[in-house]
Length: 335
Image (cartoon, rainbow, N blue to C red; front, top):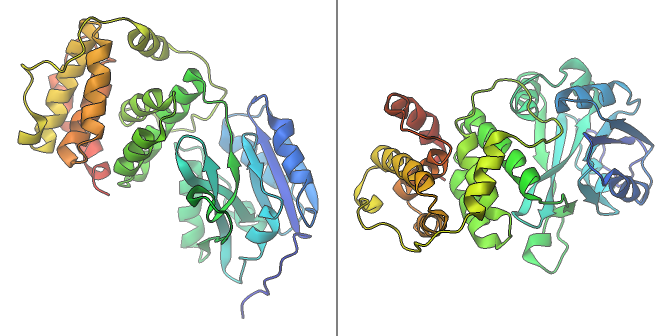
């Protein structure tokens, strides 16, 4: 028999996590404003990587359920109660969407059954939440997505709060580098959706996000990389390149038309092209190329786009790596 659903949140803890963000108090204020009030608030500050922070916080939870609240979230007042109302007998995880200034409606804020996390803690993985959810499913628990028929704007429909980080260039680059790595790990074809959202957003940091996502697909790492973001040589390389002036404003006519190539060859040509553009410090051509390819919306255009973005981080082509690199990319090109 299903567990009774109700609108109360008296058996829910808010687990508020920070890896050093400067706006944790804003997240806490939104938690204290929940109606009805949550049973308890647990805070974890400065514990990294992120999976360790989640596990440490979960061990301190004494209620049957907890909501993970990252420091860059601002919850709507009825968020915790609405997520709790979705719990039935075999539900281990409830997911709600958030409003994001760059991507629109995103996943999201999550309510966990505490017993599920106790039985299967978050692992040290590129995508700890994905691996946790797989383990939870194998134990017979299910995930549900919460709906909320409120909000006059499309982006507000079915959302339970806002994702409001400061999208500085450094934050954006490091966050979306990890996004690219997680996409590859999950082997899910959400890359076209992400490209379209970034193109449509008009956000000043969207170009950093797109380049970082494409490059992150080829990041060689296995463990959790969500730690306080610091500058790296790759971030500095990209910033200097994009900030540099360039005389050219047109895509070089000597390059092949990507529409005539299959996706593997489009990726390879894009990769070589990105290397050439970086050598020439042709930032304007690079920007024009990104606009052209993001607007084409075909697998070969997306493959070329990823290749161009990845290529600007290389000083010379590594032809031997291209087949394996495309094998990583291929599952992500389809919606």
